[in-house]
Image 1 (tube, rainbow over the protein chains, first blue to last red):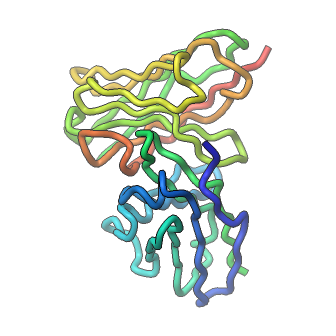
Image 2 (tube, each protein chain N blue to C red):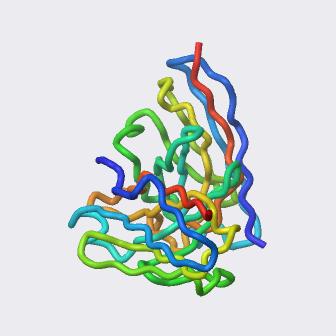
Length: 110
Length: 121
């Protein structure tokens, strides 16, 4: 099964907003409420940013928000800060009882 | 504080075997499904396997099914991944990751620091 489709890179200036899309199929993103997003800084382990489509874990800034429509999930980061520069991955439970990740998006804060 | 500490990564020849471990602390281990996720250096994340809290149910990615076995010892708060018939494409950093529910495969938080497996002759 191919990875969920994410743009390879996005960029924005401090204070701006960006959105990262994550496109799957009716067997994964469109199928499941278990869509999540992870942030990964170089050399570090991934960190959960969003769970169950649009929920923020305790301690995650409300600048991070997410949604899903059909087979596409989206992560929006508002008020970009330099520390937001990282790789971002979406993930989804699938109808085959597996988990599929997106290919990852590198966010550059200019 | 929830902590996950992986170990066991090493250099192994193609066709060889390796066993990874992940020791958990800071939560009731049996109440959480657990997962292994790997990442080729410089590449994306790839889910490998998951196991339910009681160990009764296991799930695998097609790429490792029949070669890898996930297991857990709830008396020792330890998650394991037995990897057999290793291939060059199994070279990656392997992370263990906690699930919020007894059943795995929902979402992962937190992750361990990872252990590097290198398959090469």
